[in-house]
Length: 289
View 1 (cartoon, helix red, strand yellow):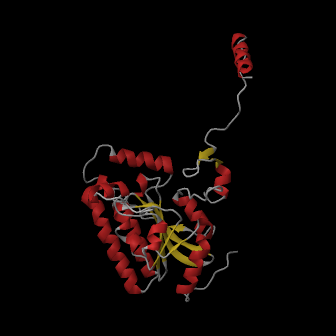
View 2: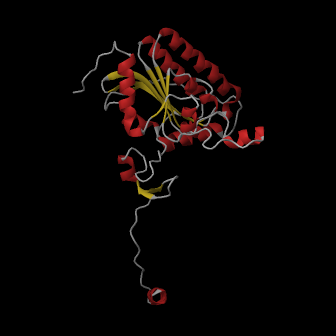
View 3: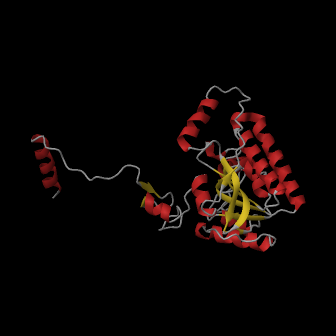
């Protein structure tokens, strides 16, 4: 049969007849990073970007995350009108930022604002790994800090979804200063008695883990999310020892007391609502019309 197909193909070529090919739309399919199944994107998105075969949680953009968590039509983004700094005068940095803005449709690696979860008002910040891997520079640090200050001022609970490769090396020491800046703001939030729920998604590393992401009153994580400061390979090479199985996964960290609960994406909104309802009894539900 293989020979017959080859002969048929050669016959088409000799007669200059076009060979009919399957009409498969480009960009409509994606391979699961875990089980390697080929998935139709629309079906994947309807399943909250979770693989229906192995339950692998794909990474989400900030906009898609907000659509999943915040009640439709209630999100009001903070408009800070601040721009990046380039303290090291890197020639390509400003250009790269502009290209990313055009490609992703967002201004920076975090979207912050006020919205409602089943009628309960919250301040929410959602980091976006599509923008320089969610690295924390001066703008990200300022947006996070502003969100914390708004939560204090408006007496609202704060939720931060973290995804990050760490501090933004293109901004040098300025990016590292954001760790102290955000951590000190969280301390003020704690003094004010506001609830802070930190949600760790894949991956959360570096200066973000070392600052606000680890300071939540309640720390949640998505299944199999990788969470840490330095990566496993760097740690292994430094200490010259084999690392435990599952090291830095959400499941490993739950077992060792670093996080409070692992929450499946389909349950995340309900879990956040229950926690808000439990810890902020002064709020009243507002039924959306």
